[in-house]
Amino acid sequence: MPYQTNDHHPAFEEYCETIFELQEDGVDVIQARIVERLQVSRPAVSEMIKKMKDADLVLFNGNAIFLSDKGKRLANQVVRRHRLAERFLTDVLGLSWAEAHHEAGKWEHVVSPRVEAAFLKLLEDPTTCPHGNPIPGSDYQVPEGTSALAEINVGNEFVIERIPEELEFQPGLLEFLEDANLIPGITGKVTAVSPDGTTTVDVRGSQVGVGAFASQRILVCTP
Image (cartoon, rainbow, N blue to C red; front, side):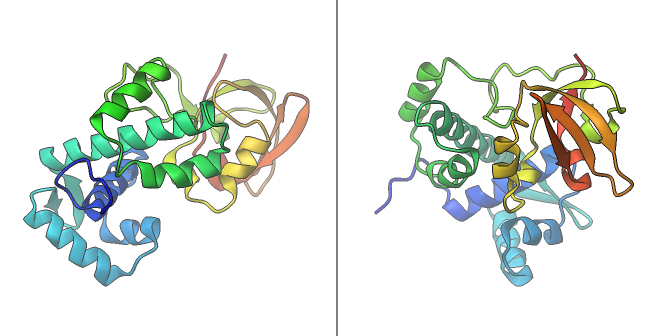
């Protein structure tokens, strides 16, 4: 039988993590958003949310779904272990962003407190995952002046801060961003904006077009 780190079923962990990430990205959490994120049926989501309410993991305000204090604790644990695992898989084992994201989705359910502590020691207490998203419980501080890439004017430079979780679920997007060096800490310059919302940027001498969906969500700071 697979080793589990707590008394919660992995499905409860998955749903708490999903609600946490949607709220982190500023998305109003309703059942339809969970259906879209997890790619499962509406009846399956409805049934699971009911079970989570019975387990005191979620609360409701009309159609909106919120994590209870108990649900927040579980979500913080799962998200923390997922993002630590991603950091280990990329920084130590050399996996790509996409591979690490996929593998960390399995590790998050089985990482024990002892392994989590070992991750923190080995990685020297990282504050973000490889995509720049905060690790719950770390000393992460939100940088001042953060905005979406789409808000940067042509001719201005930027430093990439975060690739929000929402973009990690877009097929092929993580591979594209990593290959194009659109990663946290990299400095770029906006060179053009198309009528369709595509933002063209210069990164290390290469011109890269970032579609409207991604450019409206990638978070950057001005140097």
